[in-house]
Image (cartoon, rainbow, N blue to C red; front, side, top):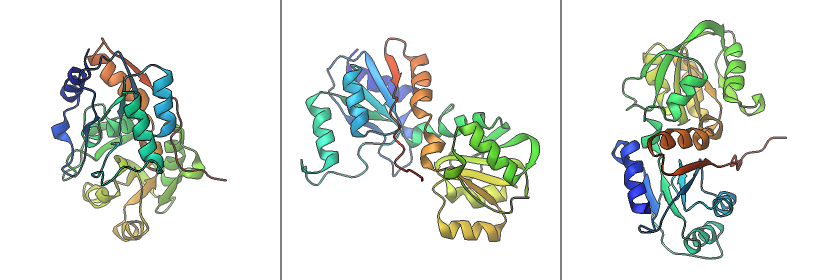
Length: 258
C-alpha cells in the first residue's frame, strides 16, 4: 500500500477535521508513493523512536503528539531535532500524527482513561468539545484512596502524582481529561464532579480550584497518555488489517525523580 493511501485511511478511522483549530494533526512528513507495510505507533517522535522504526523496518511513524507545531524558519544541523528530521528524511520514513482528533475519538486517550478507572455512565462534559468526560466510580472513596487507586489503575508511580484538595473528601463522580486538561476544572465543578483527573495542572489553577471546591489529581501529561502506542496500534490495526501496527517500546517520559 502506498503511503498516501494509508494516510487517507488513517484520516477515515480518526478524522482530522475533529482536531482543535490550533492543532497540527495529520501528515507531518510524506513520501506519498513509497510502499508501506509496517507502522510504528508512539506517543512522541524522538531520536530513539526514529532508530527503533528503522531497526524494525517501519516505513511510517504514527505519533500522538505532532512532530511539527510551528512553521520551520530554518534548518540547522547543529540542532538535535533538525538532525532527527534529517534522519527521517534520509531513511524515507513518513510521519503522521493523530492528536486532538484522537483525544476525542471513541476509544481515544480520554476514553481509555475512563476505562482504566472502570467508570460507568460515561458522557461528555458540557462545553468541553468532547475533550473531558465524566463517569461514576463503582463505590465512593476518600480522595487519598482515589489517588492510590488511580496510581494502580494507570500504572503511575505515586512519586509522580500531585493532588489538590482535602484528602478526606468523598469521591464518586469523576471528570477525566487526558493530557493537559486542567482548563476544564470549572466545567467539571458545574457538572457536580468531585474530582478532575488530568495532567499539567498549574499553580494558580490549583489555588482557584481550592476556592471553587473541585479536587484535582495531576498524574502528568505523559502518564495520562502513555498507552497511546499500544492502544493506537489496536484501534487502527482493527480497521486496517493489511498493515502491521507495531507499538513503540521506547520510554519517552522526559521527567525523572530521585
